[in-house]
Length: 222
Image (cartoon, rainbow, N blue to C red; front, top):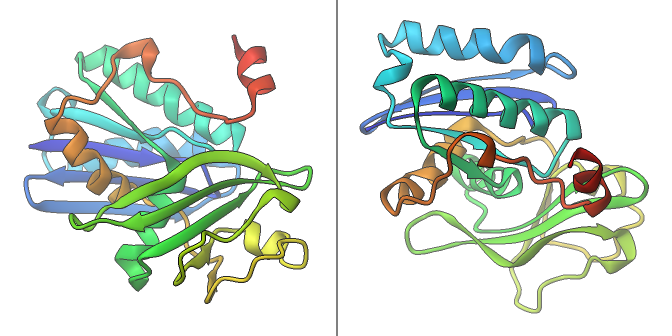
């Protein structure tokens, strides 16, 4: 199985390639440069591993929420590559990818993800590791006012994402610890995409849409 993944929803440009049980990845912190970098990074990754686009089984991408420009870039690239090679596309939540990244890198199993959405709001979601070592959404993702953020009733939750630093004094709930350094990685997207590939939870072409969570943005795009 060969899967290609990428995410541009944050200040990073992240790409990864899965070849059976092997994952190779590149992750660059590159604010405002994703549009210039993403295709060259993908081409380089494929070329260095002797994989042609039409040899892939699917393309996976971070669908957002996150930077409006970033999630549009990822969806557009996914659509273009999917059309070119006739490949299925697997959209993955960028919030879930961040929680999965943190689990893989520092082992936190319960993550309250808060990513700055500007105007005193955050993109918000609670994720808990399941028996398969993959994050599961508890409740639903939302864009929330800071006053609406509350701790999950169960204990043992950690805060993840830049929302915790941008609004540190305004978010009143207090998790065990906070990580504001990690960003969503394409390697984490691959982990979350594999079961979706086997259950055929994919889309094609123009159905690979970004997720903003803000209704007014989606209406303007339509």
